[in-house]
Image 1: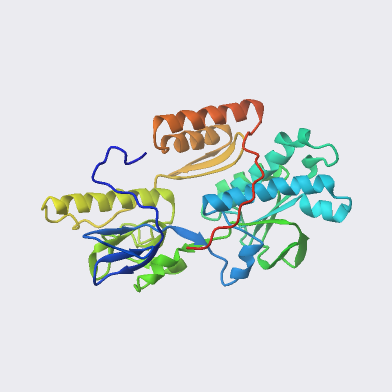
Image 2: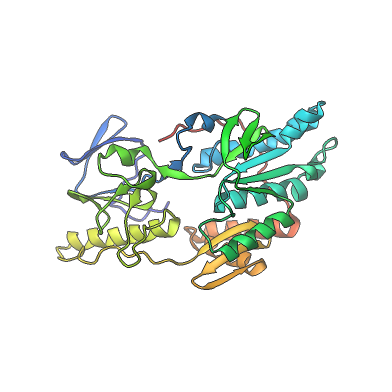
Length: 360
């Protein structure tokens, strides 16, 4: 749909297995595809910091399939709690543990608590879902560690208003089928979700180029692969130090969008024979940071301006509506959000059998 009117674009559903840099070919599904320019944006996967066996019991949120799996498992836990006679087992089904208090973890903790308290209580007769426990574990000393301390304190207060249990300074040392060990404490739960960090997808490491923290490929100032000016790596997979700030470009959506536009301008200019398109290296512009905690609860940072509450939540909604592609999508999402806000009902509560996707 996005490229419907761009006749020179071809979309292929395939998994890239390798990149043959000397031959300028991409190997995907046994097919070799030649290129003049190559832009790699493989994204990131969850980082379990050497404990890949934890993924089975604590899935992440980096793919649509993972999100669908988690939704199904959460809803199934409420159903199992309704039928469970043993009080301890029922409590484990009604306990939800999120590991990592970054923006994803904070938003997820608030969303699960609101689901249990405001949306589904009327669907059950035996269990009172309003008593479900949501525990947010963070190894550091504050939630939203990448934000200003004022925003962290504001978000923490909002989480506690929702009765989310926040455990700071509680690194997870073990993940099991029935819970975790964190901060010297054993917590029982059949619902552990991992939002504690990411690393670059495997394709980035397969390029054979030097990598930085999180397996991100170290790229030149113009986002190209060193020694291969025709190959660009952008987004979460790229490690680039912005000369203006001396800081690495963060692995966030705004960084990926800016890199994509920058590389597109280079390719367009060079195809037209213009020289010097790469003279000015990539410069990251920080448009600010946002994190939502729940209904009418969020924090926003725009330079030195920091605020929270309803205004921040509306700003968060407006931004996410704006970046959606297509008027129809914007209208559909806006209508759905307005309905959910007014009636606190969410329609997509399907319990499906979904397997976790393989890591790419």
